[in-house]
Image (cartoon, protein in one colour):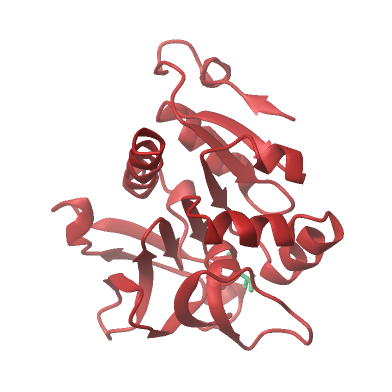
Length: 215
Ligand SMILES: NC(=O)CC[C@H](N)C(=O)O
């Protein structure tokens, strides 16, 4: 297992070793998540195998390409352990492709694409168009405080419908939902890990700590 200790990101910026958080490292921008989590004081490890998943108290599924993560997670024998962990209450935060992996239903999936599920939502892949239609905007997210969240969308999904078990956390001005939570699960269509926005990760670490404390 690759362990990123907080010391590795620079002296003086670190906190004591905190909750054990894994970042699914099959594909995508897992390094950005790992560095941000380490900076926030988490004890971070990269997860590629079931044995590595078993050692963490929370997991981040990064942005990237959900079709590739789906195939690799099945090839590495991780998909079923991940589903069991999610059903067992493991806190998981998915950004962009990670949100797609957590959604119960995917629209515009490729043939045979599977999802881990857990979030009672329907998401549409690539809902904002291609890479060159990527955009940035500020979102008001009361759950994270008064300061707006600067959100970057890169071929992101939109949450087309939110079932009764899930709660929308953020929407675009036109009402389209782009962040949701459900119990220990959190998902965003955008990428806080690349803008220096740390509040989603901090919020997620709070969930991980609570669950660790309360068993
Ligand atoms: N930035 C991203 O994570 C893009 C997600 C990608 N379009 C997918 O379907 O997985």
